[in-house]
Image (cartoon, rainbow over all chains, first blue to last red; front, side, top):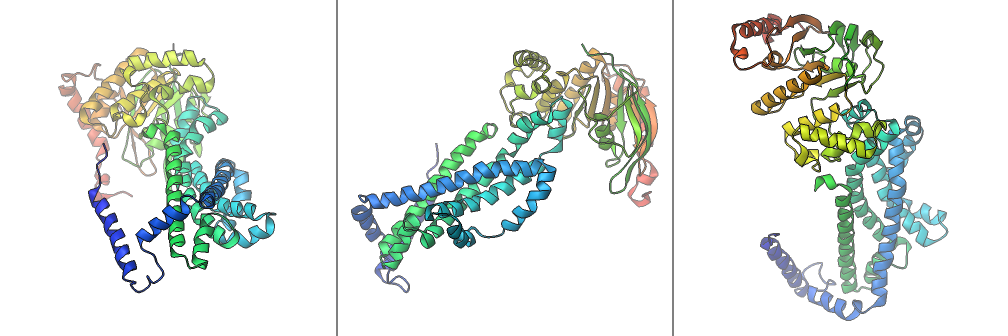
Length: 249
Length: 260
């Protein structure tokens, strides 16, 4: 059984209490920030029953989902190719290294110019962040495969294709897992900012609209929703990772 | 069963990495003999083992098995590495049945049956569905031996295979390998840095020395098997130990009188 971390519970309660006090007392900087009770009421009355609010969840999740999925589906094979094919590596890797330092959000204007719809451009930007992470992680992992692991397979009579399937692929799984964990966090970072800049929907947009209309409760509900959404996605990814690595159970 | 154990001939082998490691190394492993290779750490014992396995090519010289030059890894020989090379994402059974499956020599059912037989023999039947990470060091070593045996190799190269095991497990594993060796007398090169281990295992001990290194001494260990505690307390044992020690602890190896 898991032990209840009562110290943690106390400090969360203290955090909410502090926030309530500072908001009620209108401490410097808190003039426009509502207290937790107001946020809770607004959520209960306005957002919980609102289809538009839940639609924001779905829209953001879809963008993260498509962008993240595409980044893995393209990034893992690319990383494997870069790691295993010498000529391909020499030709393509420099381009990867050239593009990688460009932060995903710097792609926003180009992406809007390039893609026919705003939706596609946001998914693309969400794709960029996790994509380079997974490519580099997989590439490094292939190159870091223990030589004894490969040698042993060769001595036991395995062909290069068999070695790729049974030795190289499984040995990069931990790196894929790390890439996924980092990637999903980046995907949420990026989608929120992209929605604020270039979209009229999603949790990022909801939060931004709260700011524009000076509605503190909306801003906070947006932030909390984004935090929860990110947390839920991380749970999903962690679950997938555990399934990928049965030997670590 | 295994084909006749081969003779291994190493002649004039040299290798250079950042500096010269091996210089003009020549020796022969007699067919069906258990030869021990010793030498100061870093002298190139592992490099030599990797050459015999076919993973590393020499800069000069030749290595041959029954007169046929070694030019790459082959199923006629197997190397057991210093650090375990078991694939930690495969179960014990999958590790052991890898060989015949990889080469396509057996169907899955045949390979499984043979692997289970070997696991039984090595006392690992109950652990077939475990992952290597769940086993003790001694058990991992036995899995590696089972994995190696399934292909019936003719030449065994063991690179400090029992390093890092506690004294008791180490003793058991030495006995284990000697029993296994007695069954089919596969030509064996056993690398160790432990003097006692060399004397327990070997029929002959080759001592490497120098920088770059070559074979400096060859000492026949004419002690009878099994090497019981009585044998290991005999006058002859102590004499061989003294002899071997004299070749290993030369004055130039002392910190204040280094030769290089």
